[in-house]
Length: 156
Image 1 (cartoon, rainbow, N blue to C red):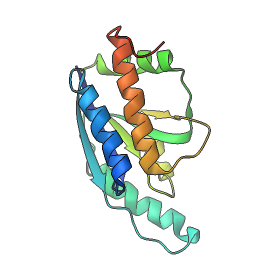
Image 2 (image 1 turned 90 degrees about the horizontal axis):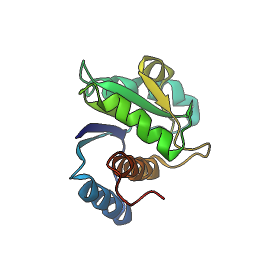
Image 3 (image 1 turned 90 degrees about the vertical axis):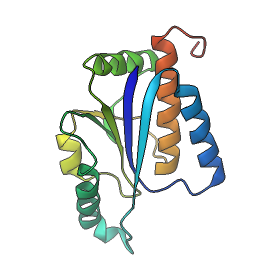
Image 4 (image 1 turned 135 degrees about the horizontal axis):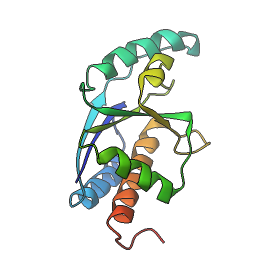
Protein backbone atom coordinates (compact mmCIF):
# COMPACT_ATOMS: atom_id res chain seq x y z
CA UNK A 1 0.00 0.00 0.00
CA UNK A 2 1.30 3.43 -0.93
CA UNK A 3 2.03 5.81 1.95
CA UNK A 4 1.49 9.30 0.56
CA UNK A 5 1.52 12.78 2.05
CA UNK A 6 0.68 15.95 0.17
CA UNK A 7 2.03 19.16 1.70
CA UNK A 8 0.36 22.04 -0.09
CA UNK A 9 0.00 25.75 0.28
CA UNK A 10 -3.53 27.04 0.20
CA UNK A 11 -6.94 25.60 0.87
CA UNK A 12 -9.49 24.26 -1.56
CA UNK A 13 -12.11 26.97 -1.18
CA UNK A 14 -14.44 26.13 -4.04
CA UNK A 15 -16.86 23.21 -3.70
CA UNK A 16 -15.89 21.74 -7.08
CA UNK A 17 -12.24 21.33 -5.97
CA UNK A 18 -13.38 19.79 -2.67
CA UNK A 19 -15.69 17.42 -4.52
CA UNK A 20 -12.93 16.31 -6.88
CA UNK A 21 -10.51 15.81 -3.99
CA UNK A 22 -13.04 13.73 -2.03
CA UNK A 23 -13.75 11.58 -5.09
CA UNK A 24 -10.07 10.75 -5.64
CA UNK A 25 -9.43 10.16 -1.94
CA UNK A 26 -12.36 7.71 -1.95
CA UNK A 27 -11.00 5.95 -5.04
CA UNK A 28 -7.53 5.73 -3.49
CA UNK A 29 -8.61 4.03 -0.23
CA UNK A 30 -7.90 0.46 -1.42
CA UNK A 31 -4.46 1.44 -2.70
CA UNK A 32 -2.97 4.09 -0.44
CA UNK A 33 -2.88 5.84 2.86
CA UNK A 34 -3.02 9.54 2.01
CA UNK A 35 -2.68 12.51 4.30
CA UNK A 36 -3.02 16.09 3.11
CA UNK A 37 -1.52 19.00 5.00
CA UNK A 38 -2.98 22.34 3.95
CA UNK A 39 -0.65 25.18 4.87
CA UNK A 40 -1.44 28.87 4.90
CA UNK A 41 -0.15 30.91 2.02
CA UNK A 42 1.78 34.06 2.84
CA UNK A 43 -0.14 37.17 1.80
CA UNK A 44 1.60 39.44 -0.68
CA UNK A 45 0.81 42.61 -2.55
CA UNK A 46 3.31 42.49 -5.33
CA UNK A 47 5.35 39.88 -7.16
CA UNK A 48 8.48 41.82 -6.11
CA UNK A 49 8.03 40.11 -2.72
CA UNK A 50 8.40 36.68 -4.36
CA UNK A 51 11.74 35.64 -2.82
CA UNK A 52 10.76 36.63 0.73
CA UNK A 53 7.37 34.91 0.41
CA UNK A 54 8.90 31.73 -1.01
CA UNK A 55 11.42 31.58 1.85
CA UNK A 56 8.69 31.98 4.50
CA UNK A 57 6.52 29.35 2.83
CA UNK A 58 9.49 26.97 2.53
CA UNK A 59 10.13 27.24 6.28
CA UNK A 60 6.48 26.38 6.93
CA UNK A 61 6.55 23.40 4.56
CA UNK A 62 9.78 22.00 6.07
CA UNK A 63 8.04 21.63 9.44
CA UNK A 64 5.74 19.00 7.93
CA UNK A 65 8.39 16.85 6.28
CA UNK A 66 9.51 13.94 8.42
CA UNK A 67 13.16 12.91 8.58
CA UNK A 68 12.70 9.70 6.56
CA UNK A 69 10.23 11.08 4.02
CA UNK A 70 11.05 10.79 0.36
CA UNK A 71 10.30 14.27 -0.95
CA UNK A 72 8.99 15.08 -4.41
CA UNK A 73 8.69 18.76 -5.27
CA UNK A 74 6.30 19.69 -8.04
CA UNK A 75 7.87 22.29 -10.29
CA UNK A 76 7.46 23.26 -13.93
CA UNK A 77 11.17 22.56 -14.52
CA UNK A 78 10.96 19.05 -13.06
CA UNK A 79 11.16 15.73 -14.85
CA UNK A 80 8.29 14.80 -17.18
CA UNK A 81 6.86 11.29 -17.21
CA UNK A 82 4.30 9.37 -19.21
CA UNK A 83 1.64 7.77 -17.01
CA UNK A 84 3.33 4.35 -17.15
CA UNK A 85 6.75 5.87 -16.41
CA UNK A 86 5.23 7.81 -13.52
CA UNK A 87 3.72 4.59 -12.16
CA UNK A 88 7.12 2.87 -12.29
CA UNK A 89 8.72 5.89 -10.60
CA UNK A 90 6.17 5.94 -7.74
CA UNK A 91 6.33 2.16 -7.36
CA UNK A 92 10.14 2.32 -7.05
CA UNK A 93 9.87 5.04 -4.39
CA UNK A 94 7.22 3.13 -2.44
CA UNK A 95 9.28 -0.07 -2.41
CA UNK A 96 11.49 1.51 0.27
CA UNK A 97 8.53 1.70 2.65
CA UNK A 98 8.98 5.35 3.60
CA UNK A 99 6.29 7.97 3.24
CA UNK A 100 6.39 9.90 -0.02
CA UNK A 101 5.74 13.59 0.53
CA UNK A 102 4.58 15.57 -2.49
CA UNK A 103 5.20 19.31 -2.18
CA UNK A 104 2.92 21.79 -3.93
CA UNK A 105 3.78 25.48 -3.75
CA UNK A 106 1.50 28.48 -3.73
CA UNK A 107 0.87 31.07 -6.44
CA UNK A 108 4.54 32.14 -6.46
CA UNK A 109 5.93 28.62 -6.66
CA UNK A 110 8.44 26.88 -4.41
CA UNK A 111 11.57 28.40 -2.95
CA UNK A 112 14.66 27.22 -4.88
CA UNK A 113 16.21 25.91 -1.63
CA UNK A 114 13.23 23.59 -1.12
CA UNK A 115 13.48 22.33 -4.70
CA UNK A 116 17.23 21.76 -4.27
CA UNK A 117 16.69 19.70 -1.09
CA UNK A 118 13.92 17.55 -2.57
CA UNK A 119 14.87 13.99 -3.47
CA UNK A 120 13.03 14.35 -6.76
CA UNK A 121 11.52 17.19 -8.79
CA UNK A 122 8.59 16.36 -11.05
CA UNK A 123 6.56 18.39 -13.52
CA UNK A 124 2.96 17.38 -14.11
CA UNK A 125 2.89 19.47 -17.29
CA UNK A 126 4.77 22.15 -19.19
CA UNK A 127 1.68 24.28 -18.63
CA UNK A 128 1.18 26.29 -15.45
CA UNK A 129 -1.89 25.50 -13.33
CA UNK A 130 -3.38 27.13 -10.24
CA UNK A 131 -2.10 25.28 -7.16
CA UNK A 132 -5.63 24.05 -6.34
CA UNK A 133 -5.89 22.42 -9.75
CA UNK A 134 -2.39 20.98 -9.40
CA UNK A 135 -3.52 19.21 -6.24
CA UNK A 136 -6.43 17.57 -8.07
CA UNK A 137 -4.26 16.64 -11.06
CA UNK A 138 -1.73 15.05 -8.68
CA UNK A 139 -4.47 13.05 -6.95
CA UNK A 140 -5.83 11.85 -10.29
CA UNK A 141 -2.36 10.85 -11.43
CA UNK A 142 -1.67 9.02 -8.16
CA UNK A 143 -4.96 7.15 -8.60
CA UNK A 144 -3.91 6.31 -12.16
CA UNK A 145 -0.53 5.13 -10.82
CA UNK A 146 -2.22 2.85 -8.29
CA UNK A 147 -4.45 1.28 -10.93
CA UNK A 148 -1.50 0.75 -13.28
CA UNK A 149 0.53 -0.88 -10.51
CA UNK A 150 -2.41 -3.14 -9.56
CA UNK A 151 -3.31 -3.88 -13.19
CA UNK A 152 -6.82 -2.45 -12.79
CA UNK A 153 -8.81 -1.11 -15.78
CA UNK A 154 -8.51 2.66 -15.59
CA UNK A 155 -5.52 3.52 -17.74
CA UNK A 156 -5.83 2.38 -21.35
